[in-house]
Amino acid sequence: PWAETDAVAPLSVYGQTKWEGEQAIVQSGCKHLIFRTSWVYAARGANFAKTMLRLAREREREALNVINDQTGAPTGADLLADVTAHALRVALLQDEARLGARLEAQPEVSGIYHLAPAGEVTWWGYATFVIEQARAMGEALQVTTITPIPTSAYPTPAQRPLNSRLANQKLQSVFGLHLPAWQDGVRRMLTETLGK
Image 1 (cartoon, rainbow, N blue to C red):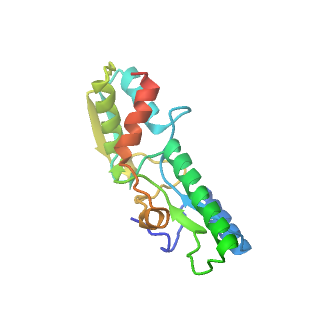
Image 2: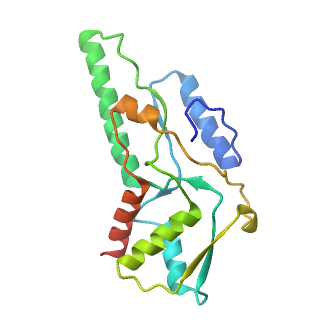
């Protein structure tokens, strides 16, 4: 997994502009909390899991081809919101403590953090999990096979990183958090999405 201190090498304009934004914030000298994340989804709006379910329902074929050489962790928007609220509370309480007691030795929480749930999975593993969970919830799906394929078999205009895994030790240590497994959030999203 990537640590916050690892050198960055963006593969796309999207990644490059995100990194440039981070650098502008850091160089400004202001207090900041920057959360890097991966594979974001929510119960509302479009996402990979919903696309897999739609394809699994609609396909006349019995198989889906899904990339199996890109690894990351599906991250729920609700987890991002909860952790952000907690981190802001910690940062504000720290500022109040510094002002009131002049606790200059207390470590600063301002900085860049990786924020993704525990564990890792490929897109193929993610799709397989979503389909299995949906079936367990009673969804009628046409697809019977999910075939793993390499990225090279599914070309896209923007190059995607093979490794999107993020080390979360800094976030967990600084903010006293234990991050849930990625499967927990995906199950919750599916329950909400499928209304089961």
